[in-house]
Image 1 (cartoon, rainbow, N blue to C red):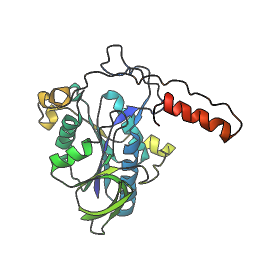
Image 2 (image 1 turned 180 degrees about the horizontal axis):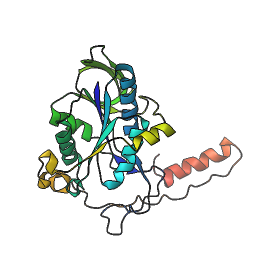
Image 3 (image 1 turned 135 degrees about the vertical axis):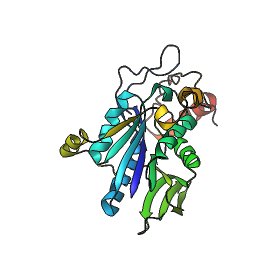
Image 4 (image 1 turned 90 degrees about the vertical axis):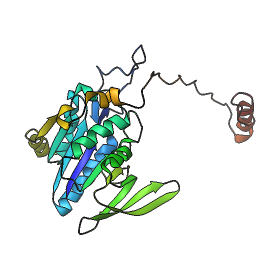
Length: 264
């Protein structure tokens, strides 16, 4: 099985995010960036399949030079090689222009299965996987929590999360599967894995290498543009209700809910 994992580098979930004064984006100079957590599930599932069925795992990442750190994390986990779409032309893209660049890179690669995270935790669009599958003209299943490949590697039985339950689908391969939490437990990179990752290939790719015009990708090719970013309004401090028993506190709570919160 030749498996591709589309990976994105995002701000660490524990980073303190600050919006630029002009609202054009976030201040990136003093925050840590990591592999998108949902993409980690995709990397791990790809490695589990490789260990069972053989083959290769290739990471495809679109991002600036700093994204190499996240790519190395995937290689240290056990991925075999990586393709890094690193070109200023790719900057500022939305889901569509990003998927267009990823699709152009993947079309020239041998591929039996593609994993994405169900969403990136920075923009939360949850669209790249679906758009990528459409551009490659292959099936797609989102929020995947279980994958079972047929012995011949031509189909997969896939569980996906839905409201109040789970769907079980059979999908022909190649396909794009968007990984959800619960699919697996991503491994930590071992010291030998980290050392080996330093020698593994990361192929840099520019827009021109893919036959893409700079005006069709990145911000220039985006269908949606961020007009302004703002921080959420500061929450008011909680009100504490004094009392030793429910008989004392319940009337106070009901009054606050009715007169201040106006929910009853």
